[in-house]
Structures are given as C-alpha cells and as structure tokens.
Length: 353
Image 1 (cartoon, helix red, strand yellow):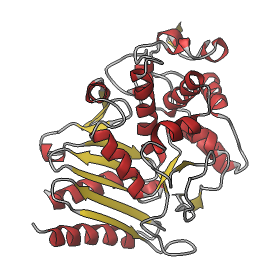
Image 2 (cartoon, rainbow, N blue to C red):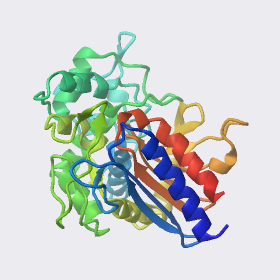
Image 3 (cartoon, rainbow, N blue to C red):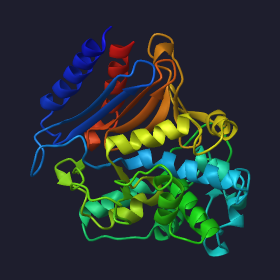
Image 4 (cartoon, one colour):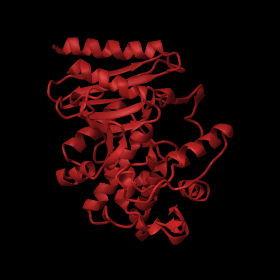
C-alpha cells in the first residue's frame, strides 16, 4: 500500500468519525511510522473560537501517567529510590496510617512503589467521586494530598497489595507524585520539566494549571464532560496532578514516545521491567508501570493489534505498534470517547496492516 493510499484511508476514517459526532468540538491524530516514513498530523472538528490546529496543545488526561512512571524509572536508575521500596520510606506517618485497610487488616506499610506503578496496591480510586464534587461545585478545590486523605476516610480498599490483578486508580499516581516531590525536593511539575520536557526539547508542553510552556502556544484545546468544558476549573489540577495533567501538541508527544522506544530516557533493561512487571487489568489488557499492553484474545482481539501505550478518559491515546514501528497519538477531547478511542485506534492500525 502506498503512503498516499494509507494517508487517505486513515484521514478519511478520522475525519468521518469526528464529523459524525456532534459532541466532539476538536480532535487530533498523529500517525508516524519509522518503518515506512509515513507521517500524518491532523486536526478536525467545528472548534471553539477557531478551527482546531494540528499544532495546538492538547490536554491528554491519564496519558500523563506514563510520564509519571518514566520519572520514577529515571529516579530508580539514579539510585534515588527503588521500585521495590515500601512507600512508607517516603511518605509521612500522618498520610500513611490507615491508608490501606482491607478486611480489618492494615496493609499500608506493605505497599511498594511498584504496586502503585502497576496498579496492584488495592487502593480505591479517588478521581471520579471527587470529580462529581467538582461538577456539582465548579469552585471546589483540593490538593493532591487532600485527595489521598479524602479517599482514606471515605473509600474502601479493593484487595491486599501485590495481587495478580490491577485495580485502576488515580490514588496510586497521586501518591507517586508526592513521592517524587519528596525525593527531588521540588514540585512535581518542575521535575517533569527538568527530567523530560527539557532534555527532549518539548518546549510547547506544560502541566495543566501548574506550569507554562517555554514557547508561546495557542490556547489549549477544550476537553469536555457532556457539554461542560473542564479546562478552566482550577480544582481539576488537584484531582489530576501526576495522574494526568500533561498538555502537549502531538509532535511533542511523538518526541517523548520516540525517546522512550529508543531508550534515550531510560535503559532498555529498565523499560523491560516496566513492561514485564504487569498484572491483568481488563479482558485483553495488561498493565505495567503506567503502560497498557494489548493481550491478544482469540477472535475478539487478534495478535496483529499487539501494541503498548497509554489511554486517557478524554478519549486520548498514545500507542506504539512494534511490528509496524508506528506511533498512533491523538485525542477526541470528550469523555464519551474514553472507550471508543480504542476501537478507533485499532481501526487505524487495520488500515496500516
């Protein structure tokens, strides 16, 4: 298949999907293949005050978890922490005490950093209960630490730490952010810039409500829950934090993924640990250290779709297909695309396969 045929097929699929859905105001797609040299960067939708632009920064929701896990991996390689360390080495007793109670037993001090990374801590998810509060009161604000403390008092742990099944929770990644701040003695957004954005020259990337890009950029694309634009809600920063929060144009995100696959940020051995120390998350999916991995299911999910990456609740995705040597990055910027973006991504892969 020629580049022009591939491009035409993927572009038509993307634009038709967006145009059919009146809820989507702006959507973005970047496809890049090292193997064939194909490069496609698209924006589509009616926009808000202006037409969406492929160079526009996009809030990527839980795609940011991969940035957090890579930061932790960098600190692991520097000897500043270890994946196997108990989290109680880095978090104060006030936060730790009673953090994880399951069947009347306290497992708080059994949780290791790796359990937070691969979502096997068994802790409850604080994001959606607190997000509901934000939707009910747009002035609602809570710091990441307060969000963890709230979940400790109001939610129940799912299972004891270190099991074979992941329970996806932003609480884990809030705690990782707090650990990074403790180890580095600086705010999480500063560490993100120092360890990832600056070395990769991601000058148009930043963290929502925490930092600004080094270069002037257009206003970030709006992301929506139903008809509500969430960008300006200041309280969202405390709920997202190191569980998301990264805002980047598609080309910056490609820089990050290339650096990860080429082992510029962390070694091949460390990346192998991040992928291999995994647990079952959902049917057809395993979860490593911030990494979603396709687990083939006969008939339903053929092995040709085997790939890895990360997904976000706003319909965001950032994946690499090793066989095709192809990156697929994008977002539909609407919560109703949280699952539909996966089906779209597989259909786009199908055009390349």
